[in-house]
Length: 182
Image (cartoon, rainbow, N blue to C red; front, top):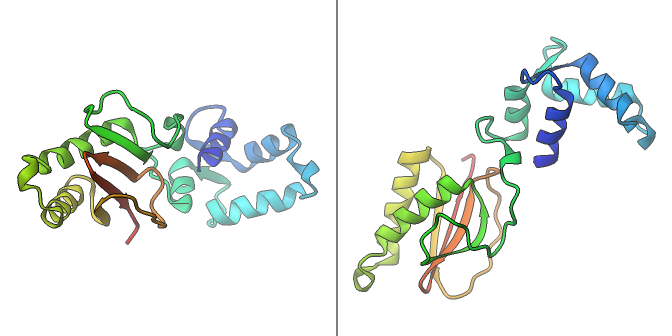
């Protein structure tokens, strides 16, 4: 999603979170996007039908994000670090990040709650921790969270809301956490 956010920002030269169809037309011309064998009118038509179906001549950042399924208060451009196996500062040394697509402050909050639920280690029960962590996530960030706790290796394939996925390891347990629309 980051290229879309970057493109919107480049078109919105005034920085007002609204772009006009004329600004879009100028952006297409300035960046020679019509050389890709797609006429300017088709590019404008597609953007307008997606992001301005009312025909107001303006595309707001909020509407742009809604159509793309991005949270406007969480712009994608914020995440510019690698996604995999990075030791992220601010996290406990016991937390090993496997994959993240989540702002650092949320990684810290979520991993702290998960760590709290694993203590003491001899009383840690995966099923209870998974249920409690999901309940905490739903209460803290809104509904539709999925929490899986596994021991050992795993493979997973899933769809999630952009910027709402976090896989990490505490001791021998991997936490797979992500949020969906439903």
